[in-house]
Image 1 (tube, chains in turn cyan, purple):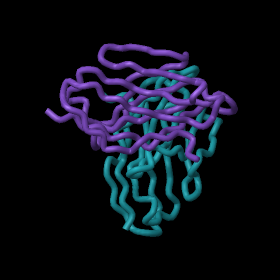
Image 2 (cartoon, chains in turn red, purple):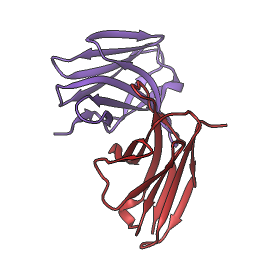
Image 3 (cartoon, each protein chain N blue to C red):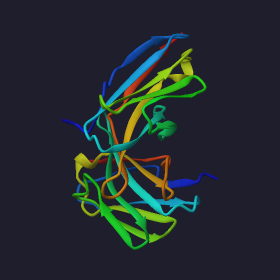
Image 4 (cartoon, one colour):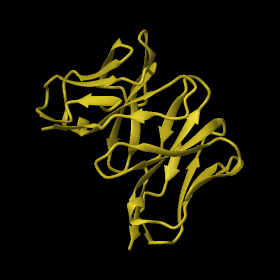
Length: 112
Length: 112
């Protein structure tokens, strides 16, 4: 089984709908991250969490919210989806003092 | 100025030749530097990291770091078609919370 899983893998939704993307990990890492990837823009950090009680905004948090339900689960929500949130979303994890972030398989989100 | 900059390519290299990928960064306080490989439609995976000036070799891959000039490069020797992918440079900043800043990625194509 994959160490970092994301659900759903693909989602098409309409403008104004609420969407939740979920991430689970079995690596036992404390740190979890949500990124979005757009063509030509690389990976941009949306939110990150260093433990269950710690949530931090990244560089592009507007329009998004997160919930860290447990050490192993980190969810990203779009309260009212808009078309420019169409992107590939990645969850990642790392350990304290990390030299590597481990990425999930990604969720391709399309907002019509 | 972007914090981490890469030439988006595409970079085309004949099979067996050396592929050279470059990355510059703006924050002199950056401490660690990472190269990720991302195949089309897949998640990024770590190839190498480097934090000391000079070269670091791992098989066909060599990372080079020059902190005075604020650049990091990745050399791929004996390039293979399987090396065709997008290569992402990432920089870890120490001040504040530790997080990665990614460049936009360089698309590399190895021609048989």
